[in-house]
Amino acid sequence: MEQKQIEQPKKLAPVDFGAIWAAILKHRKLYYVVLSVAFVVALLIGSSIPNTYECKILLAPEMGGGSGSAGTLGSLASSFGFSIGGGSGANGDAITPSLYPELMKSVDFKTSLFPVKVKRKMDKEAMTYYDYLKNDWKEPWWKDFFGLMAPPKMKDTLVNNFELTGEQARIAELVNQNVVCTLDKKTNLISINVTAQDPHISAQLADSVKTRLQDFLTAYKTSKARRDLEYAEMLQRQAKKEYERARRLYVEFMDANQNMVMLTAMQKQNDLENEMQLQYNNYTAVSAQVIAAKAKVQEVTPAFTPLQSATVPLGPVGPRKPLIFFVIIFFALLGTTIFVLNKEKQLKPLLGLS
Image (tube, rainbow, N blue to C red):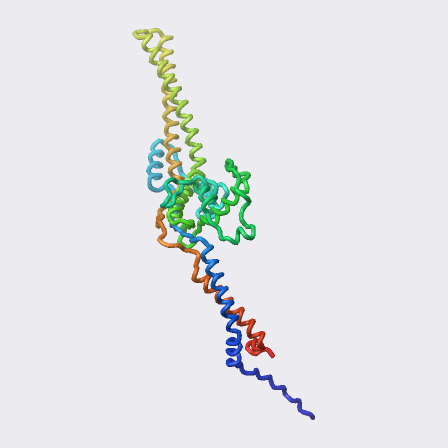
């Protein structure tokens, strides 16, 4: 029987680093040209990207209700026989902290930041955040070159959240990029990061965003409780008028019928006195409801504990110009080396290809 010969694997030729180095030296003038161009391009790109400054705020939302001042008011309302339990019901938990980042991306919230007043350190007068983004926000030159910027600026109109203009939509998108809210699900901490091309504006806007978020959530979470309070106060005003009217009729009747012993007068007196007492009891009961409604508003009002307040950043967070410079030079060097080795037939041996 014939024995089959086992094919031996081909041995890779050793890499000739001397030849590779000689090929590189041979085209060193090409390296000088490419690296010089890459150096200029890196400087041009790095200088074209404006510096950005970031201000960060940390908030701890107070969870649950019925504690603190709200609990005190609840106890006061209970003394009138009116319960305000259920502080953590549907009305209070409609927007949980996990939804705050999405809430801040909403058109309503973004446009609410348009009229916020901001001011750079060198400015004499403040301007709106909308005007700052529209007139003073700088973009890299290549966005203009490739036509990525918005159409020519047009006359401002009133902001209609249902139908934004092209300019307003562009500004809203800038707000969305520059104002970012995140939630740490482990610690339940809310982080608000505000980026601007001026350190003072980033700090001012971060503080305003925190206030707007609190106001926005307060208005939302207390909307039903405030409507109930307004209705209770309206009933209280009506009850007070009816009580004062009944009291006035009773007093006028008593003044006009002193020392009268007629049964009809006595019956009339009893009727007026009973009506006055009835209106007084109604007024007292409605007043208790007003107290309870005020306590409910306080109970469902969200509260935040600031763990890190807004401060003016000391230095820019971007762009990372050394990294930009390194990446451009690296890829220019790599591309040139691949071109040279391929031209000198040294690329395939280096990659282990036959």
